[in-house]
Amino acid sequence: MSESFEGQCQCGEVQYEVTGESLTLFTCHCQDCQRQSSSAFGMALWIRLGDMLLKTGEPKLWVRKMPSGREMECSFCPTCGTRLFHRLLGQTEIISIKPGTLNDTSSLQAVAHIWTRSAQPWLNLDQDCLQYADNPDDFQILFAAWKNRNLPDKTKK
Image 1: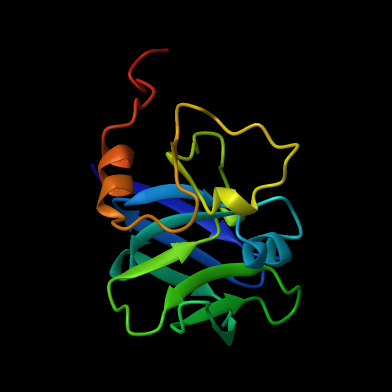
Image 2: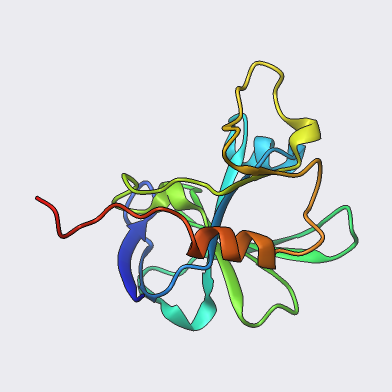
């Protein structure tokens, strides 16, 4: 099922569009995502890199080393600092969009919570979602859960 959506940074300098099929959406409760989002968790909407088109602006890049030793490229607006995308270096197929940057977030519902051992104790996690104490061994399970989620029927008015 092909999708089409657009997003931008807070100031609007960097704008993008995606045409293709999103792969999964999950929340991450690791301390890095908490710091990056200035919140209780971060969110990740995975898409195929080739499905995204940068319409305006040029994000700045910052590379961080992850606990696994792998490196992640983080893209952000050079003017307002909004984090837009993440990509594991060496990963040529998938990019993670920060879904709060989408122009329409009304239909987003995560299928999983990862790094729940770092979740804030006051946060009530959706028990219908997959949950992992840290990273799942295989993200294919998250891909399948996203593909099989109950989508609203857009034909009904």
